[in-house]
Length: 342
Image 1 (cartoon, one colour):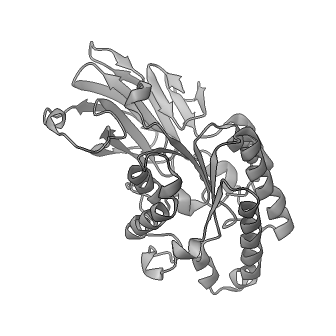
Image 2 (cartoon, helix red, strand yellow):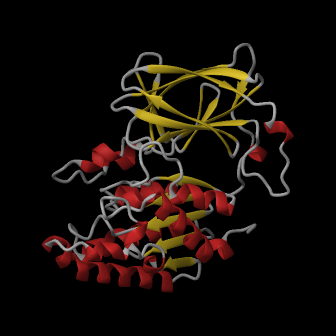
């Protein structure tokens, strides 16, 4: 999405008029949001507002520029890069528009690599991290021009990802941009549109319509983890089949990657989770059948990806930073043969 001379990657709608002279950014379309299953805790409508993995992308004539950016409902952080080269992490206080001055380092242009770089070294990338609603005002080029990136300044392949808080990157901390999806993207030389919904990945029919409408080379679906305590296998079957069938109907040649439910959920000993264990097995069987019916659907057995409690953070559920690194390597090993150019 192009807005005020920048590309708002992974943003699907902008809302003006809430913050003066600024745009509030959302990862999802109005149609998808309207169909969110709010549940008793209303987690869906809350988490759909998280701006995680929305990126502001632009190229500047000048080596020094000012970016005006903010966080609306909570404090937040952004991660700034030039191409694939990390620049800085910046704190955004709630309710304020922050001016960030960015300067290029002359040494960066001298760096050479024999490998193909995903992003041009001239491309500024500002990624919103984790759980807050992002706000964008503008970029001041200080007399120089600002423009969105050209195709040859971006990765040639895109993966769309949908899943639970694990795919979202919970457990890595509010300042970390190194989730397993971020690491995986770098290892595969692609970019990822992360549409995961922490705590509320319920595969609503509107989300199936929305996700399948988005054009990508690869569709990565981690389904079922958030549904095991709320939905029968029959309801999961209806929703999961809808997402996969619509994705295939609208994208006949695209690769679809499915993950079985992460097995460490079975180790949680409270009564509700123990009751859900048999449901997980039924969910997994359905996912296996979906993969069997299509040669271009690839199933990853998640028990081979996240199977060791030492990969978890303190909450005993979400992978730590180290766990995310291990997961990225394991997933890469299983799908790199289907990613073009690897």
